[in-house]
Image 1: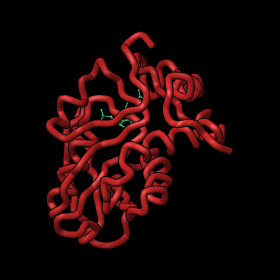
Image 2: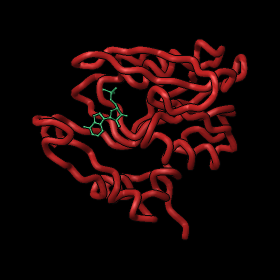
Image 3: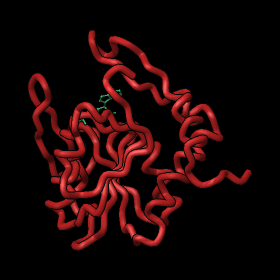
Length: 185
Ligand code: AMP
């Protein structure tokens, strides 16, 4: 199957595969459920084509995917871009020695871990997740990458919640997002 380069039509096709689930995981949150997108081969194909085409020729050495939905898109992108894939996980899930970062949530804090020596000194890294909200998770992941001597060349997301301004928190690193949402969408 030949999928055309990203266009308004192909992005509208993907957008129609994102399901809003109100009040999950808590009241007031509209959860963007990507499982209908994953279930649709054409939609998933468009996402991976559209994201990878932005980075072809950029010589990305490693893709760092954020648990858990960042693994799905990051893994496919790594294979496409001929880059290594490095998982960043929640506390206690990686088996060997880790670097750890603690970051603030709306209430309390959270931790992320990456295996030590995952990133080569000076490696050009793309950080991937399914969705950019406040940017706290992606920013913490970038800290882990930099601690290991990596250079965060860009962030890539399928969905960006524009009204939470996560992009500003990630500046000056470029942010590539396929779909943009306003608060009421
Ligand atoms: P943040 O750190 O605020 O940018 O949150 C991003 C992380 O939380 C990503 O791993 C997302 O998968 C998840 N997330 C935040 N808000 C939503 C939402 N409305 N729908 C689905 N996932 C979300």
